[in-house]
Length: 84
Image (cartoon, rainbow, N blue to C red; front, side, top):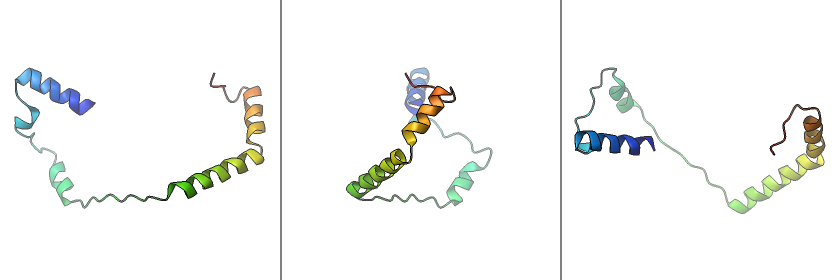
């Protein structure tokens, strides 16, 4: 939202699009630093059904290990506030 808001403010104040304005000066050398970095993004994807099955197993294990009892004790002792 910030970038959209800023583009609208620039357009209204200068009667020009932000893309038509000259770029700001690189006084701190960050542009050179950014150009020297090799940034790559990697995304891992797993099939959804096995992932959901593992999450379900972990949740059931936590419940079997006493999650509800522990949370109830924390609420009663006022160490955990109820959300409602």
